[in-house]
Each structure stands twice: as structure tokens, then as C-alpha cells.
Amino acid sequence: MAVFAKDALKHRHILITGATGGIGWKTAKVLAGMGAKLTITGRNTEKLNQLKVELYEITNATNLCAVAADLSSEEDRKKLIETAEEKLGFISGLVNVAGISGGSTVDQLDVEDVKKMMEVNYFATFSLTQAIYQKMIEQGKGSIVNVSSLSGLRGTHGNSAYAASKFAMIGWTQSMAVEAIQHKVRVNAVCPGYVNTEMARNGFEKKAERHHISFEEAKQNSLDTIPSGRLTEPVEVANSIAFLLTDAAKNIVGESLKISGGNVMR
Image (cartoon, rainbow, N blue to C red; front, side, top):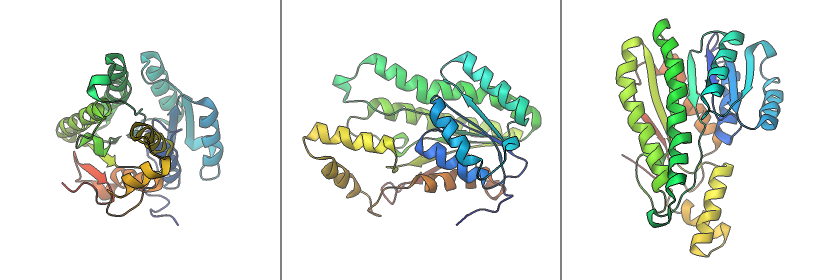
């Protein structure tokens, strides 16, 4: 059942990065159902084409632009923006989902892995946003939602590299929000905990290996720390992102919306 009206984002052009992942995929489908024009991007061309097929069941081809891109490449970022604007016009909304996870304890971390984490999760996202934000300033409107994590709000064992990249995103979100609202551009973040995606499954596998236990034990140990006792579903994150993009959230600025099942309450 649809949560939002079919025209809640009508006439809005929203770009979604990381659209081929679990959260990005669901976000694209939710926003398409709200009448938005969408540009979707990701590195996996096959998955991007598969998502296009599913979106055609919700919206028509004139409302959709798909561009394969590596956001760490300046050339790809430029091509993405140019292609999106040429087909669908001014980008009034941006959802930054693209990111990677992983890491280890500080004594085991390779500095190159830390650099890669920061490059993908922070610098590439910052650079793309900066370019799109310039046009939002000119138009005097826009909304940006960054997908951070509970790891951007508190540290956990073996998570220094990933947490650093997500803390960076939160600090940037808050600082940019103060500047951007002067131009009627809103910037916010969502901070999910464990989401039922491939990324979470990979995390449980690594925990199982580290503690010499089964996958199911590792997963259950994590679920035991969540008052709701379950993983967040991708569509729940997508609905939170969608809300922040709508006019219902007009005075929500610089927030970090936790989706934790009660795991983090501050």
C-alpha cells in the first residue's frame, strides 16, 4: 500500500546515487510512485537496466534517466549531471545513497583502505553534491538527503574506517544545512542501523568469522541489541527519505533521522 500521494513529488527531478543497492533501489521505486522524475545511477550496468525495467511498471520512459557512473571519477560526475539535466531538466532533489562498508580494528587497518572508504563515502558524494548544489542556489530551491548510518553517530568495535566516513557525512550535512537554508535548500540525513540488504548480510558474515560463530548466531546477537528485535527493511528507509523530500518536511533542516528500532536514542 502506498504511503504517499501519487503526486507528492510531481514536477520534481530527483537524482539517486547508489540506485542499484537495496536502499537506493527501493527509494527509486517509492519516489517514482510519488510522481517524481528520476535520474538513477550506479556502477553496475546490468542492475541499473534491471531497475529501469521495474520502474517502467510505475512511471513512463519520459520521466526516467539512467546513467552508469563511478562517482569517484570527476569525468563521470560531470557526464551524469549533464545527461540528467539534458533529459529531465533542473535537479531539484538529490539522494546520496552510494557507499561502501567494511573495515577492521585500528591495528589491522591498511591506510589505503581508509582512504578508499573516505573517497567513496565522503569525498565523491561531497563533490557531486557541490556541483548540483550550485544550480539549486541559482534556482532558490532544492532538497538533499544524505544516507549516513548509526555508525555516523556512535563508534563500534572494528568500525573505525566506516564510522569515520559516516561521521564526516553527518558533520558536513549539519554545516551545509545551515548555509543552504539561506538559499531555500534543505539538507538532511537518514541514519539507518542494520537494514535487510546485502551490506548487512556481509557484515554478519564478517562478525561470524571474527568471533568463530555461525552466520545465524552473529545475526541473532546483533538483533538482540535492537529493542524492536528485527532488521529495518529497505522500504522503511526509502519512506523516510521520501518524507524528507516532500513539502511536509519544509522546516526540517540539518537533522539526522535515526532508523534504529530503538537501538540508539539520542
